[in-house]
Image (cartoon, rainbow, N blue to C red; front, top):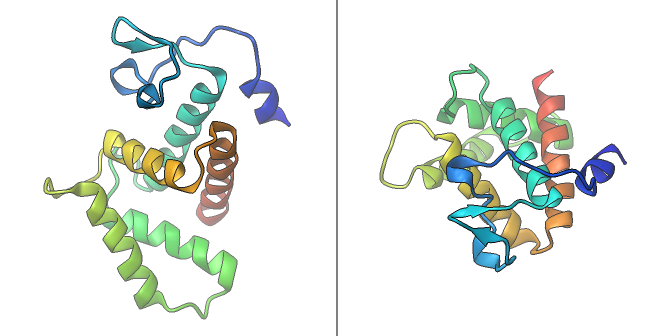
Length: 149
């Protein structure tokens, strides 16, 4: 309920994502002005949750995601769902593939921008509705919090 109240709050939103866009400009929201997107409350909520999820995944707090961090946290999440008898090798391979897919040809660590793009792509593939995407992200954030603490 708290998220919904924040999402539908009438106050003006000024914070933007990387380069001042929310990533929904291709969906034709009609609010694109001067190379900046005037974010809706739903866009703002998505941005805030993606940032929170990134910070939760960044276990060592260095501002980038390493493969070990992504694998470790997601294995803990899987254990919360399915117990400790999960196939750890299969899960490790799955999340290594996801991590390496976010990197493309660049190699190294995953930046926030790459994580954000990947997360938005996954959300759009799951559901085109932004409100539904906020609910999905809220679940992912809750799972990450549970696995971290």
